[in-house]
Structures are given as structure tokens and as C-alpha cells.
Image (cartoon, rainbow over the protein chains, first blue to last red):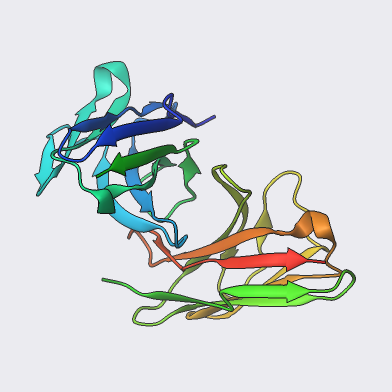
Length: 116
Length: 114
């Protein structure tokens, strides 16, 4: 069965600090997708990134970067030079199979609080 | 990007009434829609998967007679919470996907049952 673990329930940082969110997953499938979503206080889920199991390249998008390591089943997310607007709950999620539209299993989420 | 509209955003109802929540994909046809439930400070739990024109597939422990799902078209799925009770109060979120694409989420519906 698939499982996603986000060990950090809450992280508090001061603005401009970097923050790394850990995500460890379990799956028996060789083909799967990993996602990160942001949930601000308003509640909607904002898609941040999708990565398939065959693509281990790390990715950078502005202040966001992701480190995917199949050897440790981890897909960590780093926010560089954090800002107050980054305060939100961040969810890592896993989808098994070839179609990214298959059902998602979410981690427990990590609440990030960025203080001015 | 793809837009999913969820309505209403907030509903307060009396115990025993039924509440319908709509989920629409505005700029794409969604072959599959998903319904999630989220309790305060917790993660999202999948309730059911709905494919257009067929019966929804419910996750273990979710009462299908309690949470009625209809996916009548490629752009609309509805979740009806029947005979709602206070324990049904929660945040309900839908998502929609188009084939092999990612899931796009609605803004959620906060249900409060008095």
C-alpha cells in the first residue's frame, strides 16, 4: 500500500531563512508520481510540482527547489529566503501508476510559519 | 492553468438536512473527479473517486448512502451529504483530472452542521 510521511508537523522560521520540508514515501509500484501542494489559510490547494518516478532530476523554480532521491524514497522541498506569504500548510502526495490523475495519497502536512 | 470551481464555499445547516456541493471544471473536461474530506489541522482523506457516467468508487469506511456522488457530465460532479449531523462538519474539497494530467483542486467547502 502507498504511504506518505511528513515527519515535521510544524516549522517556524524568521523571514529570509531557508526552510526544508521532508517527505518520505512508500510504494510497491515502479511507476508513480510525487507532488507538492500548498494550502494557504484560505483553504484551496495550490499545485507546486509533479515529478514522475523516472525523473530524478532536481528542480528549481524561483525560491522553490525540490530534491528527489529514489534511493532513500524521499522528495524534499526547500524554500529559499522565506517570506511571510510562504506561511501555509504544505502537503506531499503520491499517486501510483502511469496516470497522474490516479488517486492521491497525502502526507500529514507540514505547517510553515514565517515570521517577519 | 486549469480551474476547478467549487460551490458553495461555506454552508451552515441544521441537523437532518441535506447539503449539495458542486464541483465544476471550468476550462477542461474532467474524466475523473475526486472528493476529499479534511478535518481541522489534519491531512486530506480521499472519500471517493467519480468517473463520468459511472458509479463512484468509495474508499473504505465511507458510507455511500450518506455521501451521494453524481458525475453527470465531464465538467460537473456533485456531493450530497444526506441527513447531515454535527459530526459531518468538515472541509470538503474536490479535485478534477483529465486523463494523465494532474489533479486540480477546488477552493473547498466548509460545512457546519448545527
